[in-house]
Image (tube, rainbow, N blue to C red; front, side, top):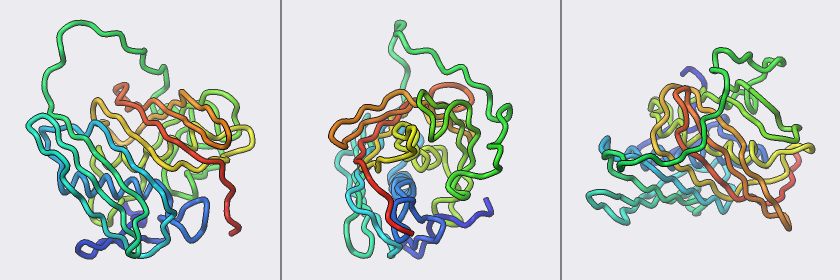
Length: 259
């Protein structure tokens, strides 16, 4: 990847780059880079090939600016079958977000047949044309292959997404960090409607029964409900082999700051 990364690292300090700018305030970071960095550090410090990061929950309770960032982790439980690790996103000395990751040991499936919903019937990414206007997501934050629907669409939406930047410069994306940074897209994909996106997500929870294979991640919106300015929405997640899990988020009605 030759594009500018979202962060550069100097020891334990991560410096946001201009590429990490968010959509709501030009002085703040994008939610996806907060989630991505938390996932990156959790995996780097506590990942284990014998375990699957089956759940990542991130709370985002403050829009951080471009101050230097430190991520602090804490082992809640390190058992033989389950590990639970907390992490805190500290921007300019102020806590702006936190994460909990649950790692589950790989084993064999339980016997018997259990009903599962069918995988989506979507064309492969290479069979889907890029957007006709040639634009990448948010000015080049990611690459997309829209399948059905869009941000002004009323109805279910489907798309493929591929990351085009490292989270931390010089540190390659792993399957987990690739889906972690992408998972923030759950909110705009589930919550955008005929007037565009009017909700800012305050969290995301990513569930994985397996890690994604390849670079492309598929999003299929499956849920959105809102009342009194509070929304909950979700997406099923895929790679080119089939289902990998799901992601859900809560969100608040929001207006963008003037640029």
